Image (cartoon, helix red, strand yellow):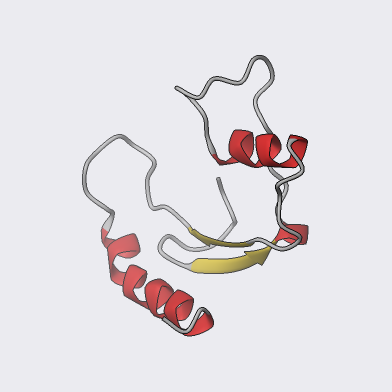
Length: 88
């Protein structure tokens, strides 16, 4: 996912700002993602009216176990924002 931001920058998105494309074909619970899960919830009429998404622009999408320095540096601000919004 490319939001057009600098690596590590994050953005809060409402349902109306997000376009999820579910994969075509049979739904498998062994290989499902966010789009598939939301499509299933919608098909079962279980999708809430409002969903808030938070996205952080990756520096790299290469395989690995560590976050990139830019994502790691900005993650605490993202977590603080989510905690503030949901009064945790």
